[in-house]
Length: 83
Image (cartoon, rainbow, N blue to C red; front, side):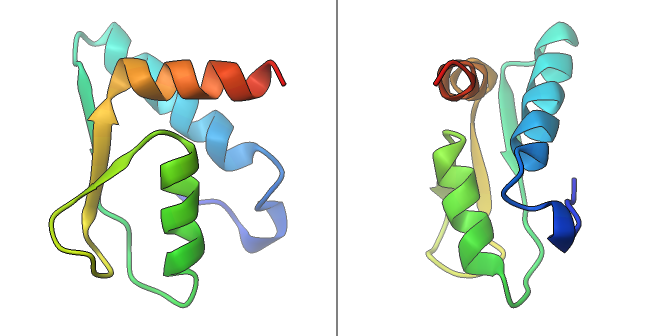
């Protein structure tokens, strides 16, 4: 999953992650994990993951995996959509 710099902070990333979570749930899976790429904007990606309900797994370093139950992603994002 990736969002162009020009489309960041527009809701596109949250919509993508929500759709991935929906499809994951429909496939019968209960957990979603992401491994972000390193880069200059890694800190902003980490804030995005946290805002979407994901938790870091492993040491606090760039490239650490993030994940959580699919239901949590759907709950957090449904709440933010209703704002």
